[in-house]
Amino acid sequence: MRLEGKTAIVTGAGSGFGQGIARRFADEGAKVMVADINADAARAVAGEIGAIAQEVDVSQGESVGKMARAAMDAFGRIDILVNNAGITHLPAPLEEVSEADFDRVLAVNVKSVYLTAREIVPLMKEAGRGAILNVASTAGVSPRPRLNWYNASKGWMITATKAMAVELAPFAIRVNAINPVAGETPLLKSFMGEDTPEMRAKFLATIPLGRFSTPEDMGNAAAFLCSDEASMITGVALEVDGGRCI
Image (tube, rainbow, N blue to C red; front, top):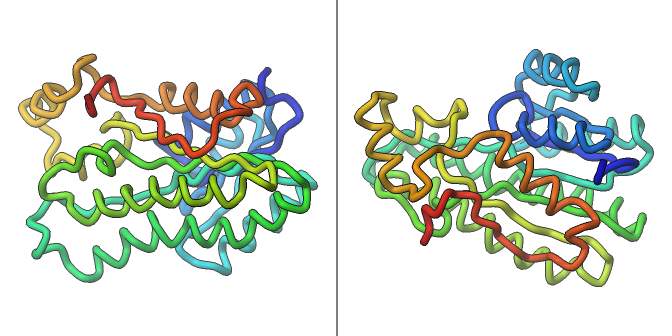
């Protein structure tokens, strides 16, 4: 129960890594808001883990503000924020990715971190504490060809994590990131372009431990970094990748 008494918002928690993080947080005693653009998915996960659900489009300031207000109404404070919601474009030569896809990737993966910070950092400053976790990617450390603008968005998130950590440390707000490798989530097919045994084998060959990341892996790492056990850790981008970035 390392998160007992704490409150948390997890974006993109209706599926994949976000669901694993929200589930682990609830198991560890946190009061959790399952936030997702898919309201039905958010409600389903929230019902399973005893949390509350919130529909949110993390690329839209008004929607993010509504999420923050709903969390404050429900919990009275926000101790933990997990920026997990993310998307990718399909594999393609960098110059052939459409402007619409580029804008969408940057809005969801990059602008969302700004929007949640704008709403929630002032609340954490007022409370005198907080933990923010950004779910980045090994793509921001060791980029894959044909996923150029996704790679760049995750590299931005890693740099933003470090910059936020330095600025917010005097306010006792810690900011860290985790870097998953490709996992069994709805985005896996998009990363690979096609989900075939041959393509899976090609991906797995780049991971020394020989398996994909799981939502449980992310939940375990996130629970530690957002707990008081990690009270001296800030500005870290922890690779949870089976050795992919070695």
